[in-house]
Length: 266
Image (cartoon, rainbow, N blue to C red; front, side, top):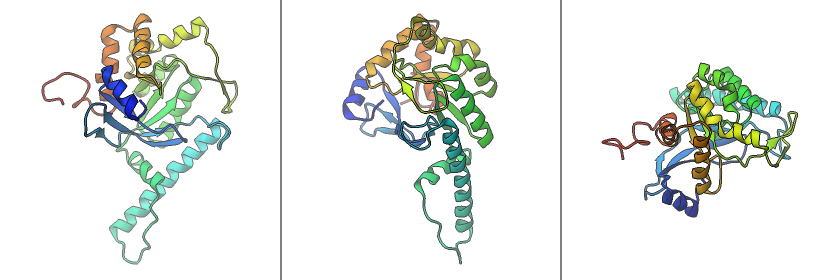
């Protein structure tokens, strides 16, 4: 959901009461916040997770997937060093120059400490496998976001107990062959669309924890329309409702407060 007034109001009118919002820019896109679309006190929880988009940007640096992962490794190594420097300073600051504050590294520290999950934006099979491998290497608590082909690696996600925020935004660009950042917009054929629509059902069948998300679709109504397509392609109505409500809240660590109509929940 875009965090602008008109979009938030449109979401609320469609029955979408909560939304996870985060920047779209950069490899480390920043920390997300969970907001209430109808309350004056709009922020429900912040931060929720650190979001990572290892897909290289167009015309920018790094220009390859391997380069993006190298940048991420260095950023996490720097954050670990940054944490240690501040720990030494806070333990005994006498005679030590105060470390320089770094907002980016500060945002990574809770992830390094295991207090905050990391959300990897990964759509395609190769991207998902690389994200899982990097998360394991860096000892992170990963969540896959997007996951247009997550059903194809459902056994891996189940074995690692990695949840997926499954995108139902089917107007997505497909990467060209190779490791570059080039993408192209085109019409998917009927079989490819069917595979996308059935993606959530494959995860359900494999026992992977998942929730349905808009995938940065600009129109809230499109999110509702595309959930119907998952129901038409193997997901039951009950499963789709849970994946859009309680499952999402549980994956984001808010299952005790949101996602179901229970006594004591706001």
